[in-house]
Figure 1 (cartoon, rainbow, N blue to C red):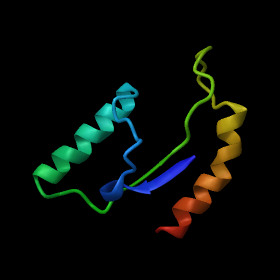
Figure 2: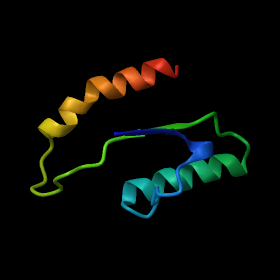
Figure 3: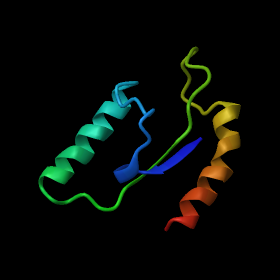
Length: 76
């Protein structure tokens, strides 16, 4: 799990890792360009198994949810 302030993103974060990350980065950068980006935090879990594709969450991700909820709650 990772949680960081977008304005102070760790150097090791590779925004080119997936289509989702590129879309998020582009959206945040466009919001910056028009002066409309709120203070932004990034919360995520790195998947350990990509295949087989399913519509549900893996047990690993389900286990991370309570920790992610706590991290989010502490910064609201």
